[in-house]
Image (spheres, rainbow, N blue to C red):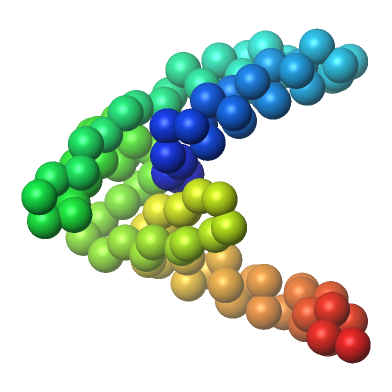
Length: 103
């Protein structure tokens, strides 16, 4: 699941729409509906917490343990079990790429 600030979300929505118009791929409108139509605006409370809507929690297969991954322009929210699997696979497949970047 992704978390964007409002401005970043709107900019991403515009980019998605522009890409759709240039794309010849099938199903692009459906993907656009799924991603943009599944978006929720959440409020941050006084303690810096958010409530993840139940439908998104179910989609993300969230349980009690979550991992928040801060990226350049967004945050990703993962179920810890899924994050652990993802990072294990990435550690195997990106080693050479990371070494090349470091040169």
